[in-house]
Amino acid sequence: MTEENNNNNLSPLKKSGIEPTMPPGKAAVYALFIVFFLYQFGGGLLQILIFGFDLKDANMNALRLFTAGGQILFILAPALILAKLVYTDVTPILRVKVPNWKEVIVFIVGLGILTPLLQNFIYVQNFLIQKLSEVSGFFETLKTFFDQMDTLLTDMYGGILSASSIFEMILVVLVVAFVPAICEEVFFRGFVQKSFELSIKPFWAIFITSIAFSLYHFNPYGFLALLFLAMFLGFSVYISKSILIPVILHFLNNFVSIIVYFIEGGEGLSNTAVVTSEEFSFNLISLILLSIIFFLFLYFVKKYYYKFTNINEETQ
Image (cartoon, rainbow, N blue to C red; front, side, top):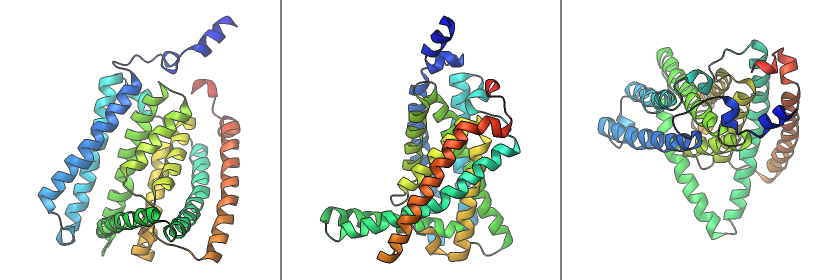
């Protein structure tokens, strides 16, 4: 009994038995700054040097390949290098484990609940921002800035997402869904979140990592929606102990976005839509109901996950 109490009092790092070359929390913070600088500034500078400031006349296939290459070179590679330098054995840090089909189905169901929830959230959020901008100069300025950022993002990604052939459609899926799912998940849910988990409580590790993930995307209207999505991805990797779960979810989320864009065009990409007062009431009720369903889902996953998936919790 005394030994069990002593184990409970140990820090997450000591419990794990992992011996890093530097404090894991510090490694996570350094990694976030390094990758942010490499990807946003290094990658951005290279893009300007190669394609110039105006991307409308750029070769879109070349730009797509450059975007994928930037993710691999400036996000995935640093994650793997840092994991090797800090921990030596990257497998437990990156949580390299093949999940069983029940685990995959469980979290796909969760994503199926979360996706319409977040869409309703954006509608409610935008309606409130619009109303506040009508009575407040601060919110009017904020909304103008958000609109400009959203237009910039829509113009930038609109060209990358536009496809006029099967080859281009496959390339779009590869660049927008497949590559980011692997690169971003290995870095954020792999190296960064696991490093934080070895320093602080799991909830805060997931939360801090999710804030960083959302900030990296420079999407003001989508910031909170991305935060909630990232927290679900963080929850999924923490429960399943498999990086492949959030990789699959990330791919599916981006793939659905591509399909919506192919169907709706620019309107499917923009987050600026403002609903009417009548639609707002419907969206608010839908948001509340879906939130209740989603939190019940999280509760049951947390409580019955190992029983449902037939996994021995002791071996995880």
